[in-house]
Image 1 (cartoon, rainbow, N blue to C red):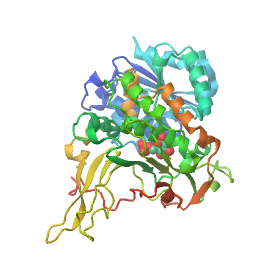
Image 2 (cartoon, protein in one colour; image 1 turned 120 degrees about the vertical axis):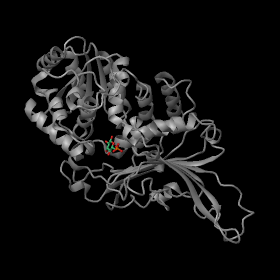
Image 3 (cartoon, rainbow, N blue to C red; image 1 turned 90 degrees about the horizontal axis):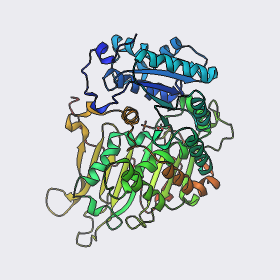
Image 4 (cartoon, protein in one colour; image 1 turned 90 degrees about the vertical axis):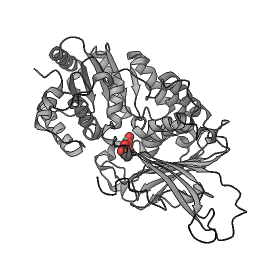
Length: 498
Ligand code: BG6
């Protein structure tokens, strides 16, 4: 028999369960042996359980691998050792291990149903079910059908990983077939970027302050960049990635969601309905992507990786210009970029303000020499913000330098309270809170604006690993310039290493 809650065993401070679900949870984790599960979901569930966010829980791994529960526990243990950012105590691990079970997908509905019945029997009393589908788009429907056949729909919620479908038609079909089994209020279409603390901070920054909202529009903002270069390669994921590519993996999902938070009108309340409505209005105003405004790249060496077609046309890099044709943003380009094996790993939103007339400053003063004023958000968990502006260099005459005001979350002393994005969203799904999840309408609209690109993608251009992508990215943003790499480094928020 397992302990009622892992914190009793782990001996860690019990966190008020007011933020967590009230009812014991049985989690069915599809894709349990996969990369996301090992990197994020198992470590995240471990933290939620051991820190007392969950009242009590059982986790049943499901995947194509024909392994048993002990092998799954071993896999979970090595995943925690490799990827958990927090120390693993033996007591906490033992309690977590006792909550793990495993069913190979091939064993079918009966075995799944029996495992859930066992878990619910252990937990006793009322339980809720969270089905987490960490599987590629092609495996989503078979898993949904299996859950239906196993009779596991009542008292359940289902989390659908991205990408949700691979184009408009498949997303519409997936939504339709999903609705034959689950009702909309049971469905949580996850995008983990929205679970990142700094993404939610965009809403706080914009709508809790009087300073910036009046200038948050085409009259003051020249252009916006959402730039998420990654140094990571594909590791064990090349087989999956080969069928998806950078646009479906990152842009139609994460980058467009961040764009929506950045560009939306103030919602009437911070609640799921009003927030989704404002985000969906942004998506409705987006112009269909023009392939001429897109650069697709592929790093040299990708085609010789395991699971990759030697003549693959899949992009591992994409940069594009996107336009939102509404009163707030008409004519303001949004430049988006992301890719694998690039020079730096960063996640930034950079907002460039319009420049003033500079005629009063003498030639050679340096005015405008370092680009326009910028507001920059760093979307790392240890998030940062910076506002850059020109100021006078001390001394005689009028020389101007680019200066900045910077804020780092580190300064609040509360960095330890940040929940990792998946942890936050799993908790929200268990509580039935849809605020940070996507709607069918929003996703379908994003696939709709993608049609010209998906139908007529520009050719992939090769780039060197460790570079910033194909050379043509500079033409894409001209006459502007990419903000990364930064000319000036962020201030170190922790110079003494405290
Ligand atoms: C995932 C993508 O959704 O997001 C990965 O599938 C990508 O390819 C990852 O590396 C980036 O997320 P994060 O949180 O590490 O910035």
